[in-house]
Image (cartoon, rainbow, N blue to C red; front, side):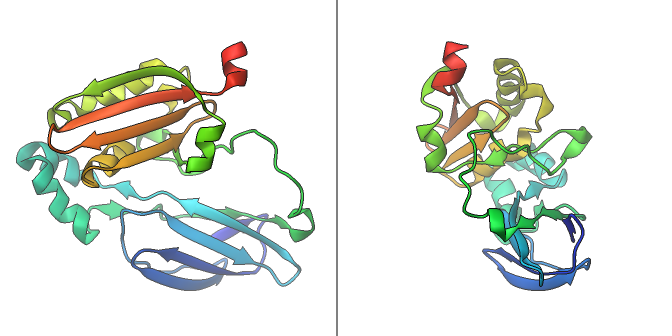
Amino acid sequence: MDTDPSKPAECKATNDKGSWQVKTPGAITVNKSGTPLSITCECPDGWGGEHNVPSTTSGAVYGNLFAGGIIGAAVDMSSGAAYEYPTTIVVPISSRQNAGQTPGPAIAQPAVVGPKAKLMPLQGTNEDLSRFTVKHKETAISPISSRLSDAVGFLNMTMPEGSNYDWTDSIMGCVKSGNGKGLYLTESHCVIMEFAEPKNELTIAVMKSQAAKKQ
């Protein structure tokens, strides 16, 4: 782990399995989890920053999904064994003197690179829904356990930037949560996924902002 720009810093990494301290540049061992790894760094000179690193699913679990269905894949997912974090993490930092400035509307670019050099979509919050209020396209796919490629293909084709992202882990994260909902951000869109376990159906809605609609 290191900072950008590279500075000596005290960093704390946290997920639902625990928390760990590290001095940058340095290395730590963390417990695997399906939740993001939240990192906060503070430098002696007053610089600092926060960074959320998404958890990715190892390739072995996809074979488990299609061989044993969602229940089979859920075994590894519940224990955390199916997940991993990037081996190298760089936390963006800045002077805390700029902390009071109001950020602009632009969405930060994902920093984590997934399989085949594709970006991982950022996890959004409910606050992001207030900026993405126009429904661009929507689909429902069932049974999702055997139509994962259809969901990925829909997202690749629906947005101009869709094929730049690795959607597999985001879809699996929503499915493994049972009756769960996921919210993900790209450069210009917000993707809402909702999984209905009784029907084994995944609903995907691609949202855009009013500004994008006018363009």
